[in-house]
Image (cartoon, rainbow, N blue to C red; front, side):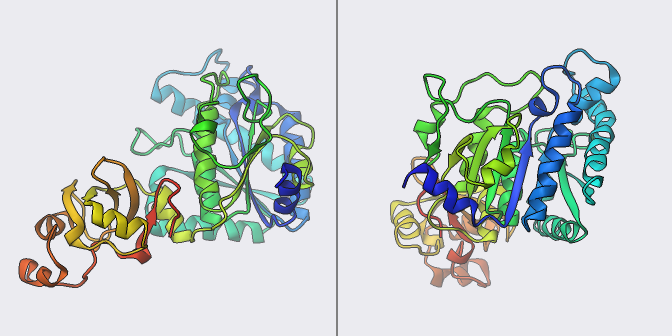
Amino acid sequence: MPSSTLRKQLMKNVRSLVVKVGTGVLTGNTGQLDKPLIARLGRQLALIQGRGIAVTLVTSGAVGAGMGVAGLASRPRTLPALQAAAAVGQPTLMGFYARVLERYGLHAGQLLLTRADFEDRARYVHIRNTIEALQHLRAIPIINENDTVAVDELDRFADNDTIAALLANLLRADLLVILSVVDGLLDAEGQRVDLVPRVDEGALGLVRTDRSKLGSGGMGGKLTAARMVTEAGEAVVVASGRERDVLLRLLDGEQLGTIFAPAKRKISARHRWIRNAVRPAGKVVLDDGAVLAVVRNGKSLLPRGITRVTGAFDRGAIIALVNAQGETIARGKSNFSSQELDKVKGRKSSEIAAILGHKTFDEAVHRDHLVLIGGKGEQ
């Protein structure tokens, strides 16, 4: 299908949109917020909401804004200094958004999130409920990472591209638009790639290592985000945030940026959470028969197909299912603790009660709570 046809088909069906804008777009390389650009962005968001499309904005720029307020010439290097810059810059950033949206009768609703908010199922669902409530109040939900409390790699995301992808999956948004300082994914000759049918090794091989002066991401992070969303069945566009009316023109089907085509089959909201939002608490290694049953035949994982258990986890934890070569083939919710699985691995389901003294489940991971990984056709 030609790119122009695909774009028009996808865009006419957009009812929910997540937009991510990076620090480089908002500040350039100066560290100062570009107020006219924020005004233009706010206008586009208001007009899109006026079309009946639910809009959610993921914004970087708190550190960059803080640098401008504090008069810093370069991005801080230590974590406390970064957090301080973010703390100073976040109110300034939100103030600009609020004033711009107020011109169109809209409010700015701030959500500051950490990785833990996405990994806890109850908090994850509450994020969605809050966003939907904000939209009913004629507010644009504006999300940023809570840099001031995310203190290490256990709390933090690599960049806001990941948060945007998680939110797009959480909301089951029809489209994620990542606004960058470049026109899209560029090929080896530096020309914009119009359409990426699938985020595979070929697309990843085009990633360059350069990034904006103040940003924390890069094209690699954007492609990772695009893979998370497209493999769940939704579309992604990476485009220049400094292009005139870029969001409005994209929704009108204009060929701007790079569009990443969605997989043909959508996966459920819960499976998206299992697949992308939660880091596995442990893993189990499967024999070849179990891999075939899970991947090819869509079966549940039985204890007899497990050869090794790694990590310490409780019942209900999300775990990785790994083949003999160490490749993750699936993730799912474990019906047993790691200690219990270690005792019953390789054994028949009929033996579980005698080994453990009880048996609630026959399956180690039921197929209803299992999602395949690596483009192998998620359940």
